[in-house]
Image 1 (spheres, rainbow, N blue to C red):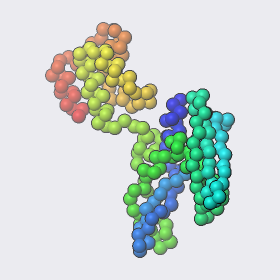
Image 2 (image 1 turned 60 degrees about the vertical axis):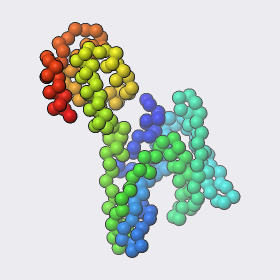
Image 3 (image 1 turned 120 degrees about the vertical axis):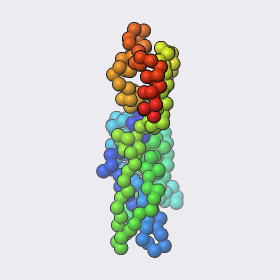
Image 4 (image 1 turned 90 degrees about the vertical axis):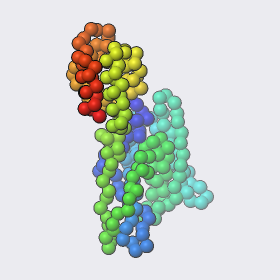
Amino acid sequence: MNIENELKKPFPEPAIHWRIGARTGDKKKGLPLAYIDARDVMDRLDFVLGFDGWEDSYVETTSGRVICTLACMINDKLVIRSDGAGDTGTEGEKGAISDALKRAAVKFGIGRYLYGLGGEWVDLDQYGKFKPPSLPQWATPNGWNRIHKSEKREVYSQSIDCLANADEAGLVEIWSGYDNDEKAQLWGMFDSKQRNAMGALRHDKHVEPPFESEEELLKFKEERK
């Protein structure tokens, strides 16, 4: 398990809540802000680090601000981060404790992506209610950390060139920079013949080249752009 990636991974859409931050002068539009509950942070810490893999503590400053210190065991090393929050308008001290935990967790990457959501104004009804924005693909568990199309095209083109030239070292260099999840995303671009050729090239086996001629190679690459 890649601990950093698991901590940073987006939460399922039902876990995302929205509130309005800034409003226009006529109160007809508002800027939505995404947030999660403190319980979601705790569940994420339990799942990734284990029940005994993290610990939180709190102190209150003279100004009434609550500071959360979050200590996490990551790869056998104790990592400590702190942040704080003041009383909320609805939950007082309890809200401050929850917000302080969430802010400290952001320093470990938990929920940090939420700050990139809700950049567009939404319509507010007479009661201030609004339709929550749709989440972009990158802000979902399945879409997060997906490789951009342009990068996929580059990997594909470079890999095909390596196959055409029987360049094993080049093929290894291209793919060595990706983890298993990323390789799975890239692997789907190639057909079975190309996959077999790449596997054989890596293991010094003789196989039929994936293209019978340079013209066929160039034509195929052009069609996949």
